[in-house]
Length: 329
Image 1: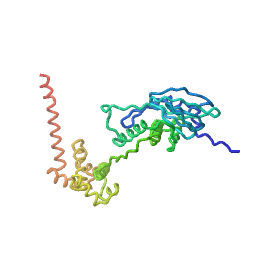
Image 2: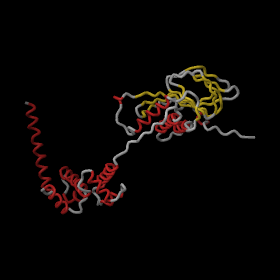
Image 3: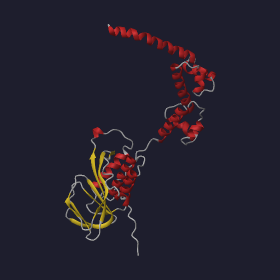
Image 4: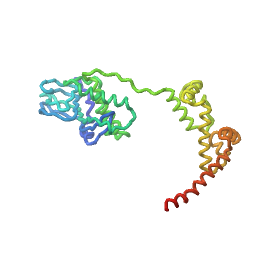
C-alpha cells in the first residue's frame, strides 16, 4: 500500500489567518505594497466560489488537490503545482473537484505606484527600482491562464508563515522578502521578454580610495604603512599609491600626515593637554618630530598655535557683551 506523502503546508492550517492579521506594508522601488491576505485555504469537494473579481492582485497557488477555474470565459483544469493570477478586475469562478478537496495558497496584495515627488534616495536605487518596475510590468502581462509553478514560488508562503510562527528576529523583513520572492517568481512566467539591465557599478578606484581613507581615519593614531592599508583592500602598495594620486592626493604618506595634523590641531584648540601627550595620542612617535612637522607646515610651533587660537577665542568672548549691548539699543 502506497503511503500518501506528508502535506508540506500543514503548519499553515494551524492559524491560517496569522499573516492576514498583520498590516504588512512596505516600499519596493517605485511602488508601495500592502498585503491584504496571505494564507492557506481549503475547498471541500464540489465547493464553488461564484464569479467575482478583486481590485487588487490575487495570486492562487495549488499545493494539493484538483478542480477548475473559469477565467473570463475560458475553463481551465487545476491540479497540484499550478498557479494563476486574477486581478486586478479579472472575473473568475473556482470549483473543487466533485470527489477531491483542493487546497489553495492565496496572496491578495495592493500594488500602488508612488508619486515621484514623494520619493527619496534609497539604498538599491536604481537597480531596485528597475527590478520592481520590471516585476509589476511582467505581472500585468501574465497570460490569463494557469501556469506551472516551475520557480517554486509556493515555498515562500511557508517561509513567511514560519517567520511569524517562530517569532524569528527580523520577522517583518523575512515576510517582506518572501512576498517579493512570490511576486518575482510568478512574474518570470510573463508573456513579455525579460529585459536585461546593467546594474549600476561604482568607480573602483574611488571605492578603493574611500576604503583606504576610512581605514586611515579609524586607525590614524596607530603606526600605519602603505603596505598595511593596501592589504585591507586588497591591492598592491604601488596600486594604492596610484589611487591616491588619481584622487588628487600627493601620496599616501602626505594624506596620512595631513589627517593626523588636522586632528592634532583640533585637539590643541579644544583642550589643554600637554603637546607631548597629544603627539603620542595622534600617531607621532615623539613630540620633537611633531614640532618639526608642525613648524614646517604652519610656520609656527604647536604651542604658538595654541596661544594664537586662545587669543582669538578670548577676543570673541569680549565681543559678545558688546554686540549684545548694541542690539539692546
